[in-house]
Length: 257
Ligand SMILES: O=P(O)(O)OC[C@H]1O[C@H](O[C@H]2O[C@H](CO)[C@@H](O)[C@H](O)[C@H]2O)[C@H](O)[C@@H](O)[C@@H]1O
Image (tube, rainbow, N blue to C red; front, side, top):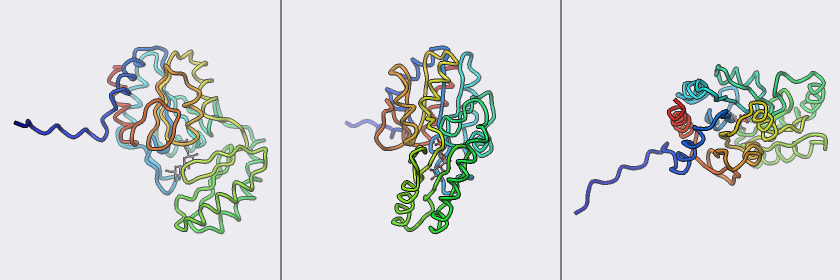
C-alpha cells in the first residue's frame, strides 16, 4: 500500500550540503558574509537603474549584520554610490564597488579622465545599435546589450567594444555586458583585503557572474562560496536564483540568532 505522496521540495529549499556548511560557518567568529548584488540580491532586469532587491533581502541582511562578530559586505561591479541608491539598502555594511576598485572611499579624479576618454570612443559604437546602453561608472565603462533585440548586432557590438580596448584596460565580461575597466582591481583581491582587515576566520560569499569567480577562487576550502544560477563555477555550492538567496540569508540569520 502506498503512503501519501512526498511533498515536492520547495524551489527555495537549500541543498543539504549547503545547509550543513552554513551551520558550521555560523559558529565561527569573526565571520564575513559578503554578497554580490545584481543577479543575486536583485533579479536581472533590462534597465540597470531598475534592479531592486527581492522582498526579504533587506531584513535578512540586517538580521545577519546584527549578530555579534559578523560583518556584512556588499561587493559589486557597480560604483558604491550607484549601488547604495539603486538598492536602497542601508545598514552597518561594508561597501565595495567597481569590482573592488572602490574599497575605502571614492576613486581619485585621475582615473575619471581615462574613463571619460574611453566612453567617448565607445559612444558612437553603442549609439549605432538600437537597445544598446552605455553605462559610465567610477572606474569603467560598460556596454550593455540585454535590450538589443537583434542578437547578431549584440554580439557584434561586444566584439567591437572588445577590440576597442587598449592593453591598459581590464576586460570584464558579464551577463549581456562587457565592461572595460581603468584599474585591474577584482572582487577576489578586495575580498581577501577585507577579510584580513577584519581578521575574519571564515567567509560566506554569494555571486552569479564571471567577475564573482575571482572571489570564489580567492577563498579557501573552509569558506562557503555559493554560485547563484547555472554555469561553470569555482564555487563549492550552488542555489538556483535570487529567491533561493533570500532563503539562504534567512537560514543564516536564524543560525546566527
Ligand atoms: O557585481 P554585480 O553587483 O553583479 O554587478 C554587475 C553589473 O550589474 C549590472 O548589470 C547587470 O545587471 C543589470 C540589471 O539587472 C542588467 O541589465 C545587465 O544586463 C547586467 O549585466 C550593472 O549595470 C553593472 O554596472 C554591474 O557591473
